[in-house]
Image (tube, rainbow, N blue to C red; front, side, top):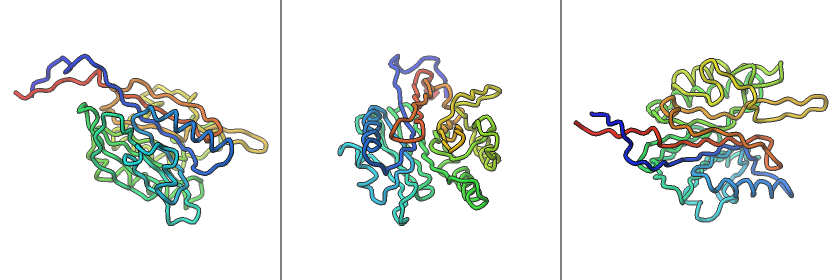
Length: 273
């Protein structure tokens, strides 16, 4: 094929994807804040949330307008008494996105959708909620799920991956200001990023930015911050990033939100010889 050094047209298209751990349970001002967060994010093309704590589709999607509901894909812990966990991916019905496939990788914890965006590119969006805690059994389950994601055939063959959500663990010591925060999942995260050729939106080469903590834990005598919410993208997509921003949490959650915007500026037109 012949590569032409011109874009198909000069119009720039953008795609916004938001990730947020926003627990589905709440009352009073917390519930109002959750609804306001969803209302603000309806302008985005894709919304990925974690820890919905819902047993039914209607309960998990009650924050969204009716016309969105045909475009929402849930993975819920409906058989759990407390319905802990639970994740969903919502596609804006007003966006020029063609839905291709939804796959549940692990119930209530990992899912993906495959979409075609404005005939610009095909993307695979992965939404995860990893196990929380540092006991031996929890770390084992968390590392097993990371390996399952890494080896999933629908993920391994994709070139344009966006993997984000609540990882509930850190990869680098500077991901937390708690000097005692363990790195028990570091090796599993290293293997995931290396084998899938993923780019961490904070760590890239030798550059580090330690001002990107996403969750604050308040104790009786101390307060610690950590970067446990992350977005990883395929290296092939790095030239399409407009920005990745962090939205500070309010009453709706104790996790900050992350928003990634992609653009088509660097897309080149390929023609057959």
